[in-house]
Image (cartoon, rainbow, N blue to C red; front, top):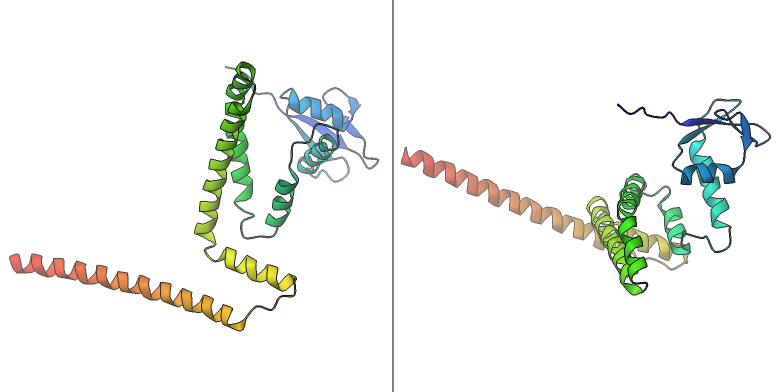
Length: 207
């Protein structure tokens, strides 16, 4: 049975120095980036408080990598959208969505590499874009299930920020729409109830 390696413990001191307890040496963010690329897991603790600060250190590594010329991975539009999700009702869904997307990309990366090697051009990148597009469509469908009026609320908020007055009738219209939808749902429930009652009466008459 294969042994599971425990993550290496990294301690961060007040002077911002990082200490690798596995090798008993001080390391840099670049060293930690190399460990990640090599598949070596590690956890980072604040040496004074014992707090797990792995997430913030990984974010620092990404920041360092993004600042290297020619190595940027995160599009500006993506970064802006991520910032918008903080504090939003969608925030709880975003981490899992990103995990699923990156897991899918990781599983398919060898296939994409082979396609690029065999025929460098639009083909392999088109397949990758299609996968990303499908993931985004799934994400948007999920979003609409949880926040059916999110787009309208977002538009109202954007208009308010721009100083554009939102007509009073707009709020009333939203309430009217909601009432209409509730009335329709109630009618459907009533129809189902009547249908069910009719079936039961028919069964009683037959007996």
